[in-house]
Amino acid sequence: MSKKTVTLEEGKLKGIKLHSLWLRERLIGKDFVDQNNLQRLYEPSLIDQTLFIEDLIVEDKFLNITFTDGVNGKINIDEIYDEINFIDCIPAKKIWEKNDKIQVFDNNKIYQDKNNLIEMLKSFYEYGYVIIENTKAEENEVINFAEKLGPIRTTNWGKLFNVVSKPNPNDLAYTALELKSHSDNPYRKPVPGIQLLHCIANESTGGDSSLVDGFSVAEYLKLNHRDFYEIITQTNVNFKFTDVDVILENRSKLIELDTDGNFKQITFSGRLDYVPLLNDKNLEIFYKARKCMYELCNSDQFKIKFRLSKGMIAMFDNLRTLHGRTKFDPNTGFRHLQGCYIDHDATEGKLRRLLK
Image (cartoon, rainbow, N blue to C red):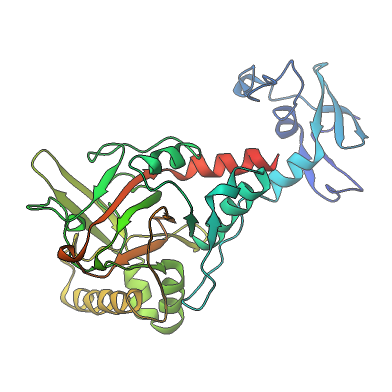
């Protein structure tokens, strides 16, 4: 046989040309990868660049391959098919507006059956948020819940932060003011991926919550305000936070696209951004574009509104979903939320493992 490449004539890999070197570094036997973590036991860069395929046999779900240097091993057909076609178990994102059903899950059921946890995580990745009911309305409960999903992202706030109205706050979140739709911590590198807000008490007048699908807003801009969309996706703005002990800065686009032109990240926080000094024409277009995006992010067309009650957690994708609140009167009752951050690799990794 002795071929550099092979093209299978049937099955899932029919018609796909496979190279000998590409196949060689995907052998899965105990001589090639650690069977617990699947890390290679050799350096693939040192494989003989001149080796060919000596023999290939299809055995049920495996390719049994012998190479010209005498090495023999197996490759899982399903796994390389998924790799070639980039099939991921993380669900595709579903764009939503205000009329979509709010995604609510019962904390008492999530961990009773792994399928409930799977459905919660799938919903989170589809819609960019979930609301969890029936957690304990106690301090640090948000940490207990979050650590079941992954490690806490510690920041200069610590492992968690308390959202209460207090004198001389170092962030507007710690006031009773209205907070328009925004991303959290856009000045960090990287921006925290997932935020959790847990309600311990919400007894004051006002203080209702809202969420907005930033991808839905981006899609609307793309379809209806193309000039605004173009400048927003091409211009980096500076986000800055100043405190007694630290000054944090990060540059990013309000709408970040991936290499295929798909929505990757929304970073919007009008009270923290600094627009670069563009030429007059582009600067004026950008200001109009940002105003348009602001109006969309705060319009009833895109916003779902709800009230966090004791024991509820709002968990949302901080790279997609904007959040806000109405102003409240601390003289009418106590309002106390605790929050923390985790990163996407934790929840994605958890979901992939659950689905194996």
